[in-house]
Image (cartoon, rainbow, N blue to C red):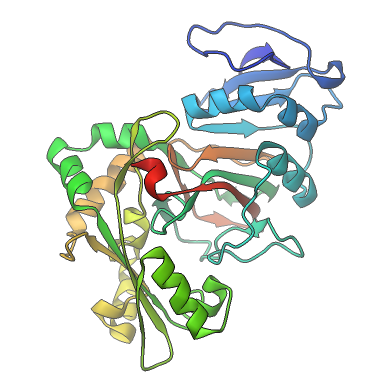
Length: 350
């Protein structure tokens, strides 16, 4: 790892032109700032320079330092502070974000915790495409935390990509099309195929579901089979509220049918019909987005992405608007847990 020794800072500082420096951290223990040799630009890496570092305490005292690096790099990796532990992860995430989100319906909860979730349950031999968490919803987390409790035997990385870079390297005419048209997300909650509408909305009361949809501007329809269909308009390009930068912010590569392997896509179309797939995304005017467009975007994101192998105890902090994430196929037991915080949306980003 490329290193720059540091610790408790008096306040936020510009990272441009930064050089190796040392200051005293809580308990007279230092940390080391650096980067991964295979990914020098992202994520920024923080490791303990000695034993006994109180990670939650250090994070609370150095939020500005971490925030500065997070906004520059998009992601920060905390490595080597402890072994894989849900409890220690919970404490560290809460030290950086006191308002961890407790009402996320797309992920199953981890044990008895009300603010730590399991990662997406998805076949281990398949890839989960790049996406910004909850970018298809009216509000989303600015901060997303991942931690490795059990590392996979092979694969299982969580690749990340800078959404500023993606937008800047899209063909100009395509970038303009995304910015002006936006996207339309269509979701069919089908019992046994995807998460149920009751779990997603946290209630079995249809009237409450309807109230929530109306409140957030989501069109809804109850199906004859007892399922729920929702339609939501969303931007594909947004302004980051803290940096002012434009970012490619969406779930195009994940929700589009081309994200499915041929066999799964064909089976779902046969089972549900083209218009009733569990998840789909169209241009904002309702027209179909060609597979070729999504392939172009996906290949660009793959080229610009970085990935590292998880070590047990790793905590990855991302700015969910600056960085999109995915998941690589894996073998062997794997346990990655997730926390979300600093919810935002609406006028904050326009």
